[in-house]
Every structure is written in C-alpha cells, then in structure tokens.
Amino acid sequence: MSLREKLGLKLLHQLDPERAHGLSIQALKLGLAPLHGGPVQRARLETSMGGIALHNPVGLAAGYDKNAEALAPMAKAGFGFLEVGAATPRPQPGNPKPRLFRLTKDQAVINRFGFNNQGIAEIAARLAQNPTAIPRGLNLGANKDSADRADDFGQVLTQAAAHIDFATVNISSPNTEKLRDLQGKAALEDLLGRVNAANANLTNPLPIFLKIAPDLTDAEIQDIADLARAAGLAAIICTNTTLDRDGLASAQRQETGGLSGRPLFEKSTHSGQNAPGHTGRDRSGGRGWYWIGTGRLCENHGRGLRRANLFGHGLPGSILGAAHCKWPGSAFGPGWP
Image 1 (cartoon, rainbow, N blue to C red):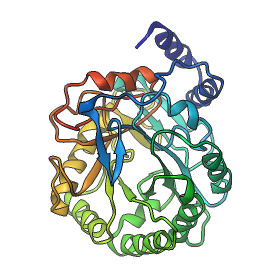
Image 2: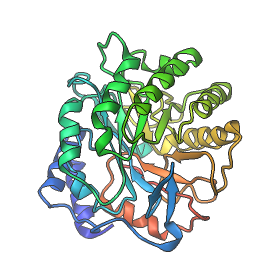
Image 3: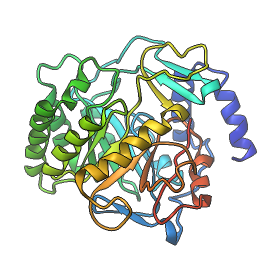
C-alpha cells in the first residue's frame, strides 16, 4: 500500500464508517484515488467464471458500489470483475442509521444496511451509460415490503440484463427480515425456477450465480447445491456476512447485522469447500462447477479456492497485492476492509 493510500485510509478511519464509505465513492468519481489503470494482468492469473473470461480472479463484491456510481474508476482499480448492487425493483432507504460499525480489534465490520439503493431504474441507466472493459454483474435483491419477493428478482434481472455479464441471486443478506427463508428447499426451488424463466425470456440469457449464507449446516449446503445444479446455475458465491459473534473482542461486537472481515474466513471457506463436493463437480480446476469465495488477500493460499469477491472497503493497493500471492493455478486472495 502506498503512502498516499495509507494516509487516505487513516483519514477515512477518523470518520463515521458510512460517511467514509460515501466519501470513498465520491473520491473515485472525482479521480482523487490512485488507480492501477486497468485489471491486474499476469498470464498465471487468467481464468474464467461461468463462461466469462477474466484477466484475474479477484473481483469487487456487491455492497460497495450499491448504485453503480463508480463503474469507470473501479474498472481501473485492478479488479478482474465487478459486482454492483444489491438492486431492488423500487428505491428503498434501508435500515435506520447508524448501520455500519468498525470492529478494529477483530479486523471486521458489522453492517445492517438493509438493501438501501436507488432502485433498478436508476442503476440500470448508469450501467447502460458506463460500459467497462472488464465483466460486471448485478446483485439481485427484493424490496422489504414486497408482496412477492421471488418475483422481484426476475424484475431486476429483466431491467438490467442488457448491460451486465452475470447476475447474482442474493437470498443470504441477514439485514432484510425473512430474506434468508428463501434458502429453504421449497422456496429456493420456486425462486430459481422463476429467475430461470425470466432469464430464458432474455435475448441473451446470462450466467446466474447464487449467494449463500455462511451460517448454514452441511445438510443445508447440500440441499442448496443440489438445487443450484438442477437449475443450471453457473456458480455459488460463498458467502455473505455472518450472524455469528464467537471470539470477537471489539466493543461493538453485539451490534445487530452481518459480520464480515477476518472472522468470516473459516466459515466462508468451509461453505465453499463443501459446495463443490456436494454438486459432484470438479473443485480443483478445469471445467465444471464454479464457486466464488470471500476472505483475505493471500490468506486463502492452498485452500483450493478459485474466484474471489473482495468484501469490504479496501483501497486499490489491496487489489494490486493479489498479483504477488503465490496461488496454485487460479486460486485467489481477497482483502479485508
């Protein structure tokens, strides 16, 4: 990390976390953040994800650029791919503030945003106006007060599909009441069927990913993986944030919401290592089932991981560090905020 980045990060850490998040987006839009200029490129990093060619396997997770405001600068930050959102059919404010908390002692954050976003009409317009040189996807969400949450996912997909390369069905955020109920076997089967029907009606159907929670049992992971395989999904993202608070030392550890950062590493990795085996696909490389992990830069070395969403609010130096990890094949290493 450069001196400029260290100073910038120190300054941001003096501010309220959500305000710092917003200012980092503004800094990117104004050209104030140091950027790599494009994706990190090394021959050994080239890979693919659901049929999408990538210069490197490290991507930006949904939740940072929720409203697709900084597509152009983020495409120059070194990532191999981007994911924006989550987007819902209608704009919604999310949960009351404060709703983002730093757990410095634990190298983690807790958020309870609640799918705050400007709605798919605004987000799709920005996607249309800002093409990027790297693949980008959209995290699909449902409105909190929706009468038919399963239908919301298909609506969002349909409106944005012409401007994205993949879409993620997000049923694992802990911050929208009863959203995780959609991970149940019957509910998930119905949801995936309806998303697939919307996808089939597109001129160019997209690879569909599924983002799961880290708090599932092995049996639940197996059920989800089997349904995902039967539905023909392209990948599973392991995982969203956790409700677990075991072993935390920070004063704000009891705040409600989803926990991400270093404490999520073991749970996320366990889920990912189980998902490919449960589908019966190859998890060590080659063609077959793809899965996308979340964790820490260079820490996942040797774990058999293949793609990464960078989870949190790190500076561009975190992405550039990916090029120096000693990965086996196309394994990955994302960084913490």
